[in-house]
Amino acid sequence: MDNELLEKISDYKIETGVAHNIRKNGESISRSETDNIKIKTKKDKPGIDIIIKEGTKEEYVHIPVIITTTNYEETVYNDFYVGKNADVTIVAGCGIHNECETGSAHNGIHTFHIESGANVRYIEKHYADGLYDNNKFINTDTIIDLGKSSSMTMETAQISGIDKAIRKTNAVLNDDSTLKIKETLMSDNKEEIETNFDIKMEGKNTNADVSSKSVARKDSMQTFKSNVEGNNKCFAHVSCDAIVMEKSRVTSIPAIVANSKEAEISHEAVIGKIATDQITKLMSLGLTETEAEEKILEGFLK
Image 1 (cartoon, rainbow, N blue to C red):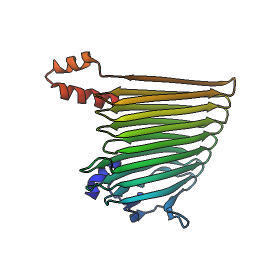
Image 2: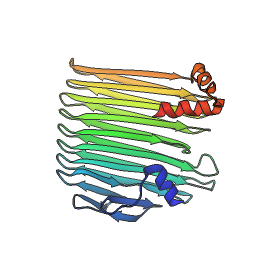
Image 3: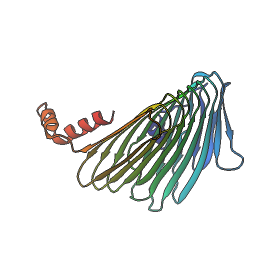
């Protein structure tokens, strides 16, 4: 069961020479460091410090969390210190398996301190399964401070099974820095997802691109909120695309603020259903209606 959860959220298998920390039910069950990546347990609160040496190139660090017990809630603080001109990939994620009616919850606060010239790719997946509804919760706060000429690419996915989730991302961009976010969400049954982006373009020549694609099914609800402030010469674009099915509901609440005449910020939102002609076309190739819908959704979320 542990391996199945880990594969869902991180596609991770322990390999020699790869830094990692696997957390299960509140405890670290496996940890490895490299010469360039150190992982230290916090002394004042639950969580770890991940320290990436200046100039580190093409290394990975995996920090998945799994919960397999019930009536359990944790709040974990992870800080990433990325040195100058480093180039790394960080793979995170949380998986919950809960077979009881009482709840299990993970609250993750990830803070990124990214120094000048560094490049970070951050991959995060969330997943849950179990017999009952309204007992699996994952909430995340991602806090990003991008140094001069640094960049961060975030690829986040909420796969399925999480009954309630609040996802927050707060970022500050300094001179010549770049932030790119690609979010994909899937909600089903009576699940609720709220996702929030608050991005401040403080430095000159900053660039931000936020893309959210989501599918809402049955009686689920999704709310997308974004606030982008351009306080200097910058370019930012935010897009929210959603497919609504059955009795689900999706709300998009954008806010863009230009506090500089050199700020260029745009937002677009598209919410709708699967086009009938797409389904008909695939059914003409021999697919059932359900198979056609699944194929369309799979392509949409890629």
